Image (cartoon, rainbow, N blue to C red; front, side, top):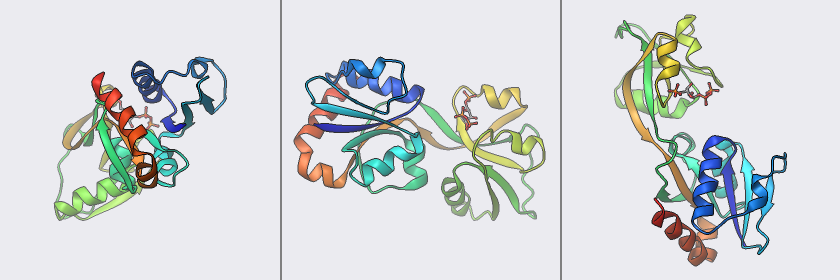
Length: 205
Ligand code: PRP
């Protein structure tokens, strides 16, 4: 049986659809309930719903063989996993965003609010720009509006949240999409099954 960690939410539902189309259907997962683990009747696959930022932890530590995770999580947490396929789902960009009239005064420490402190730190380090990172957990767009930060580092998909809050993307840090990952130990002992799943997913891209 192959154990698959899926990110709870819309991306996870789309990832499950891709897996079902690739031959790994598990109809019970579509039941509307609060269960977290589902197995198909033939017991070839077991799905878990995990918090999106935790998927790579389950995979890295071998509690799941494979998982679907946004590239943002891989860039932020750098888990020790293999990235086997770009599923091209959930496409968005990691951006620096701020007020439309933002001017970066080099004489001042730049205050950056974000859920992705490592990505932000690495990006500004590469530009030799000193920053003060303000780690938030959500609704990041609020920070520059109320004066908590100068800019934000966050995901931009449609750009609607920024536009409706009078903010604009200023720089793109990375292109993001969902990735099919596997654990190093699982790969060693289970690679033919894992590669079969990877190849079946790739055929339907
Ligand atoms: C994400 C992201 C932005 C928004 C971008 O937030 O952090 O706020 O989506 O999408 P858009 O460009 O299509 O408007 P999410 O909904 O995950 O919630 P969060 O505020 O808790 O991070």
